[in-house]
Image (cartoon, rainbow, N blue to C red; front, side, top):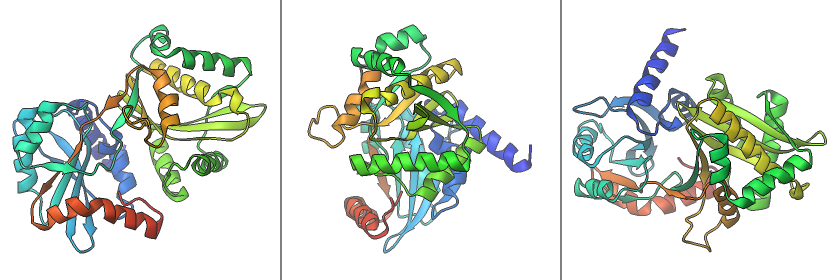
Length: 338
């Protein structure tokens, strides 16, 4: 193991041992991905009475200055917010504002603690609602926790002879996966990052043994695919896509079931299926995604809101105008700023 690999492993050991739900956005793997672009990444210890390792991402905002982002941190109690806030202020450098996104279920006491220490609600860069499958349970328990619809559609796919297998992340399979993603994007209106970005993420995670590609096949045709990111005891449905052909096969349902079984067999405890719209907003875009994913378990999880701590007056102007800035950036570049 090289010295850089040893340093990365030591960082991940700290995060996995400290964060309550360690997220891949705090991993050395994500650090490697993001360091290749406009974001500068710093490893910080933001605890006082205990070790609290956090990757801090910094980027220049035209007209404002340096902005800091702490994505998907976890393991915080209300009593931690005061010391954390002081460390952020002390170590902000020239940053005009810091945003934090806490990867924990919404907790009103924790929300109040952030507000009490000067943090204000901010625009979240990551999804706030998701469906999580408890893969620490037995296969029978996981099936029992599904809705009847999901179990029935798994059987439909099996009867039709759909086969799900892990796939090597070679050039041909990356191209197949990109095609599935783009077809899904066109059909659904969902947004995905550019081809080069997606492939770089997949390759980096696969190289660190933290990413797996799966394909569902029917009669030698790849009809659905999924890339799964893993970090410690947690896994995420990172990217996915399917063809328009043969919707009656329910291939995507069987694809996810195979993934769930593999994760459970590997000792992964928690499988986050990614963004779903808020269940209390039936007119929100993506209702079909909610119907599909929520059939795997009976509850939709709401994460903590995002907060911003302004260090200078211009921070408040950024907090209020960030949404417009990001929309304009995407319209101009076709990419997502975060």
